Image (cartoon, rainbow, N blue to C red; front, side, top):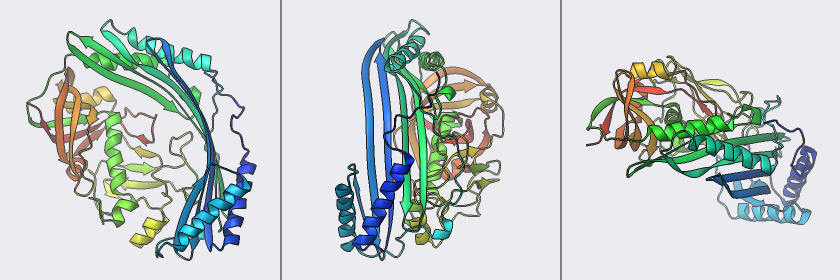
Length: 449
């Protein structure tokens, strides 16, 4: 696998910038007191195979312009996929018409000018992949074949997929900000089914990265998918009780996702979060340290500026268990009487510091309890923190996996769960935006038989 230097995008950054300037001019001419514009395009290819045969070959190419105008503090928004001058004028006119019929909102408006980014370092996010469809098919077939070859009990497949996408955008506003970005994202994935008697199990694995050279080999992805599926044969339920619970890295990332939702501005100003008024207070066990790093090279959520042009900053989100700040865009910040933290559009790379060793070390620390490798359902109440989800995984005794488990429910409260984290592993997955190892929680209710 080797990255290509040629671009499959249709527009240059200069052309997109010109379009932004054009729309800003139309808005000013139409009577907007302020305006922001985002112009973007993307190109992608997805190839999937199943049982060695090509299932789908998909190509996508899209482009769009979104314009938000303000007349005082009355806001209007419209979008279009047509970049012709007439269509751009009509889009601005539509946004202005909406603004004229919208009630004023004291928190509405562009980001404060003194918060806008002025430096634009290269974060190495753009790596096009010159991947002929024939090669993509071959990679997908190799991936699936490696999974099916793990064991004769792997009797069926949901297929393997190889995807590649590149995109670019330019954001600008009437305060003089112009911010370009180019990104790429590539992935290889596989899902297979194993059967033993009448029992069937499925599992998957995938690799995702900005650069194709950072992807795991197709054979390795397939091998892991096959091994994970095979390991799930022979599942049993557990007796209901309180157990130590170890979330593997993929499920630990989900726990961090609940934390991110709870400290995000939209939930906070609506009082729909269990972490309202928590800045400066302990929200995790003292061993937990979490950094938000927007400048991680090739990071899946890296960016120099947020969706409003506000400069991103690296910061300690949680230090020794204490919450250092929220995730705010300009609107939510004004609603809360605070300043934007450069998080319009979401959180950037989350780095959770390990406190223990690798996965085997975490199993030893678990000793006897439940290892969670899959969660089902949406039983999380963001207002109270109540947590109840279907789960599957493995029963562990004295640090050794004994048998797979399914059809159980784990329950607790996120506030208590965060405070009762006793170890975080160094088995960190780097394929997503939340880089965290496995997380061990002292005690949770597990409902089974």
